[in-house]
Image (cartoon, rainbow, N blue to C red; front, top):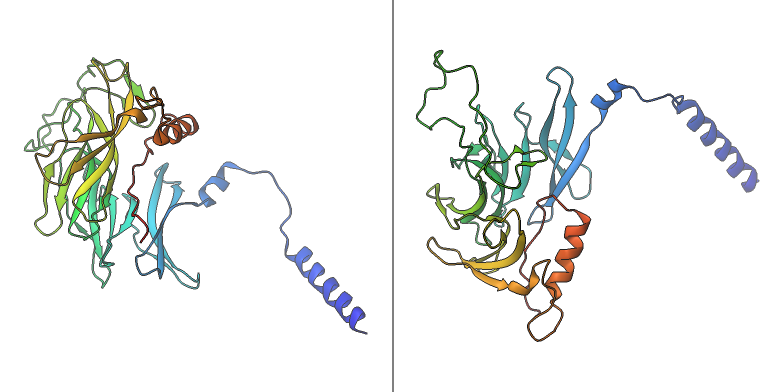
Length: 308
């Protein structure tokens, strides 16, 4: 009797599944507007929530829009945090669990800036106003500062005090002057003299100060556990950086005017051993990641806290 009952239940479930199944068909262009791309999950410090981004294509504007969502750790609750047409990205929790930060070019801004959303409630507030575009950032462990990865402003942009609403502005854009070996990149387009550098940003005073400068590219910053130093990856080389690209791990004190130290000069893709012949533990990992994702800016530096 029990086996008959189990068989009857299985048949009913199979019939219900078949009845609810949609007939197969070929994909169409309109199906693209129903797709959702979920990325960049970030767990809150208290472990209760996960913030992430959801990207969708907009038919009317023919552009993508990215919003920030949150889901409870047990998956029972979902909350859409942002819904502006400009889009938001890179959600990051403050270590004290007070803020959820993100990047956005809201309010007609040409470049992305950092916005803070108070966990207790209220509207998000723009806290940075740096020249150029913020590509990445990281909270200090004490939640008082941010380290920003800022791209130099476009030389073709008008000065900040220029009134762009005037009708006498030239309709023909200025010619693009290129004087570097690597003149073009995916997403960024034509490259000129712009580089990416690190800025220190104080959350309380809303003040940003440059930490690194020069004809280099810096990215992937990571704070030390005591909030006193920052590790990062610098793309540098002799003479023309574009012709002899070299990525090394640097460490710098988290204060303006500090000089970065090449923490692991053996770790460039071109140098895999220390002077004594020992294989550099960093170089193998960096080379593997370069081969796996060449051309993308996702090389990461990090600190490891010794076990107690």
